[in-house]
Length: 349
Ligand code: UT7
Image (cartoon, rainbow, N blue to C red; front, side, top):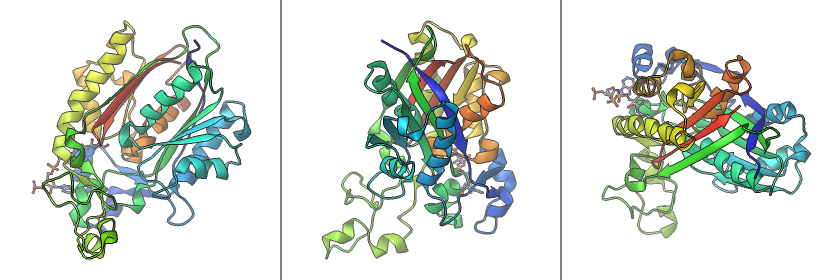
C-alpha cells in the first residue's frame, strides 16, 4: 500500500487587513483585550461581493495544483472543508469543480469545522492509499466575515475569526518513509451546542432544554428560519469560550501523543507542530504541556485570526514557504473545535 504525500500546497488570504483597532468601529472591545486573550493582532476579511468561500479556495488551489506540477483537469477527487459554505447546499466542492473547469470528478464537502482540514486530509489519504485516486485536492476555506455578529453582543466570537483558504494536492508517495504516517479522528457530541450555529436548521429546539430558536408555531416553515430568529440575533455562531478552551487544552496534547505513540515516536522527534490556530494561548499551553521548543511550533494567528478549516493548511503553507519545513522533517497537524471534534495527522515531509 502506498503512503500519500503532499505534492503541492497553496494558501490565499484576502487583501483587506482588519486590525483590532478597526473592530472598535462596530463593538465595545480593545486591542489590548484581544491580544491578551487570543494573541490576534489582525485578520483578513474577504471582499463583500467579489469573494466567496469557494473563490478563496480556488485561489489557494491554483497555487497547490501548480506547485504539484499538474493541471486542474488532472485532479480526480475534491474534498472541501468549510463551515461557511457559499450555499446551504450544494457544497463548495462542486462550485470549485465548476470554477476550476475540472472533469466530472467526485466532490465531497466535510463539515467538521476547526478539525475539517485534518478530517478531509484523512479521507483523501485513504483514497490514495487504496489506489482509487491519484491526485486529490484537499481544501480548507472560510468566509467568516459574512456570518458574524459584529455588535458588542457577539464580540466574544467575532473578534476571533478571519477569512482565508489553504489547499494541498495529495498523491502517492514515491519514496519509502515519506508522506502521511497516520491520521487520528475523534468526536464527542455531548457538548455540541456550546460552539454552534443553530439556525437556520431543522432542530426545532429538539436537542436542548434551552430554546435555541424562536419561531411562530403557525407555520411549520418558520421553524427553519423566522423573522423572530433574525430579530433576536439567533442566526449567529454561539460559543461558551472558556468551556471550549478547557476541553481544547486537554484534547490537543492527547491527540498529538496518540499520533506519536502510534508511530513509536516522541515529542522530541517533531520538527514542526502545526496546531489549529484557535487561540495563541491554547497553542502556548499545548507547547508547554508537551515541552516543545519555540522552533517546534508554528503559529500565525497573530496575522490571520482563527480561520477554522483553513487555519491548518494556511499555517502549514506559510511555514513551508518560509523554509521551516524541509524534506524528511516530521510534521504534526492537530486540530480541535466545534462538535466537539478533534484530530491529528503525522507526516514525513
Ligand atoms: O476554533 C474554534 C474553537 N474555539 C476556541 O478554541 C475558543 C476557545 N476559547 C477562547 O479562546 C477564549 O475563551 C475567548 C478568547 C473566546 C474568550 O476569552 P476568555 O478569557 O475565556 O474570556 P471570557 O469569555 O471568560 O470573558 C471575560 C470577559 C467578559 O466580561 P465580564 O463578564 O468578565 O465582565 C466578557 O464579556 O471579557 C468580556 N469580553 C470581551 N471584552 C472585550 C468577551 N469578549 C470581549 C471582547 N472585548 N471581544
